[in-house]
Image (cartoon, rainbow, N blue to C red; front, side, top):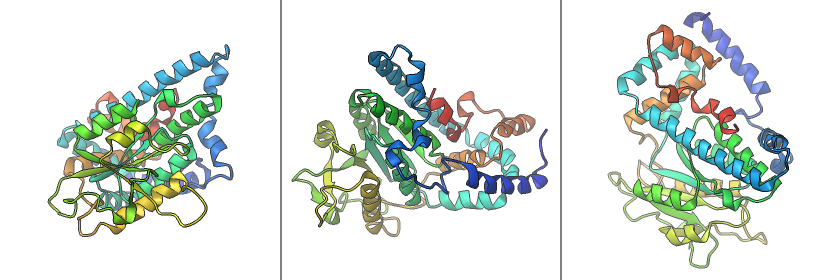
Length: 346
């Protein structure tokens, strides 16, 4: 039974109030735990693989996890490709059908955020090991208006029960980052090939002696021109080992964050936030690395549809509304990515 759109606004308002109080991985109100590396909100589902593997066979576990990596990457790609391949008219029809069932204040918030999104710059995280760190990074990236994020999860770089459990917790973090568009790569080589083919220049955070001080970076010589189409990708390495030799060799430039104390490096989430701050300070009037509002119209409308669907109090309701309005979306577009969390974990 569908509620009328007029009576539904009160229901959705109560839902969001309750949701903020009860959701473990609520994007907008998340509270970090006291033990981030063992945060069960990320790790609980990841541990299930070992409970199911009664043979306690590490090789079998690694194989199963590698297969899950492939399924995760495929699902993320399939969803995004299906969404952006929708015709403009179908996106409009679906949006018009669902919008009356979302609180007007929420719609206004979605529009405000999308109007400040940029596609000129994206981030890539190479084989991170701490899902809580990744979650913190993603929230910071969202706050600075960046829409697109890549993550390399190479199964060969993860060893041991605890590390693989954390890696599976990474999928929880990725699947719960409902307001970002995340792409998963199975290897550094695949990620570099894809980004280079899309015209991105790669700038990697690295402590090697030849790295430039981030304060001296101009990112690229032409990126201060408003009509320049050069795109950049910021690479952040593993928490302990940094970027790989392969990434170091293929990066267009490497940079370092200056430090004046005894500590040798910043925490990954801190380093990401500092880098974002420098990118922001180097940007103004739609020039520089961050260019708010540069999403193309179709991408923006697709993300608006995704945001509205994610804001429904009950996700299943979306299918019922669309069916009643005779709007038919491809199967790969349903569910929206924020519902992919359970799928990503198998």
